[in-house]
Image 1 (cartoon, rainbow, N blue to C red):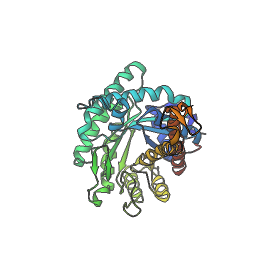
Image 2 (cartoon, rainbow, N blue to C red; image 1 turned 90 degrees about the vertical axis):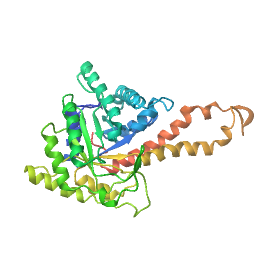
Image 3 (cartoon, helix red, strand yellow; image 1 turned 180 degrees about the horizontal axis):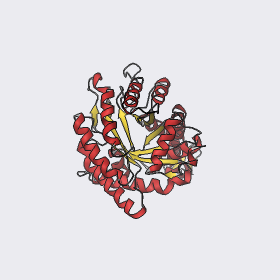
Image 4 (cartoon, one colour; image 1 turned 180 degrees about the vertical axis):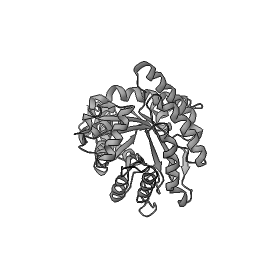
Length: 358
């Protein structure tokens, strides 16, 4: 039985999100989550998922959502980020089913200072639910890892109670992800702060399970955003086994991995680290830095190879009167970026063992 036998193609929500993650947990694979900044980037990830026969997570960061709306728009009250996230969600919903794969539509890191963005998206979810019986997004992430643990859990729980009413999954973070992303800079955080303790995971699991089973935890095991020199990042995915065993003992679960875990900062990770994390219950891994570069590669190489055809609208090595439209047409060079991003996405599906699971 494949995933499409239990979950539909297109954007999934509510019980279907749980089915997708539970299927990943039971079949020992994780789903890559790619950050979306344009419709072209979204299409690339969807194309790759179709080719790999894999489920897919498409996510928007606060900055990515603002970019989707347009960099010229004011964003002092998160209005551009809200509008961009909602617009991207409607676009993805309108096209995802055509690719024949289950898609989890997600919003990425939301720090405490960005809660107005979260509130705007959740309001859009509730409005869409009134109209259709399902939320606009499949899931959202709250990243309150910079706050005290008790406050982190309290705020997340309050939102989860509201989200559970309309079937929205919550991803939360405990333990800090190093590096820098979208203005949240943890590059100077001491290494010890990057590792979550089993007791922390249990406190979250116990609290949230009273409301709904639809949540996942991004636990810190040395994760860092971006790509760094080998040896500069000390990932310890074996620590995730301690989290699972601790929770399993508390609830007397028959599941090897009772907690849905998330791997942040997946770009540049060793395949052995990825495999160990998946074995220990990771069902989602963020991949952004690598796909950003992959998207650039195709465009970069096209421009370098066709430079003499891109210097003017008319005139190239084939003749001074030869038109160059077929070279500078955005549909030509953007497509080259899509093709190289597709290749990198397929690598992620294979690394996470999510290929051929439909």
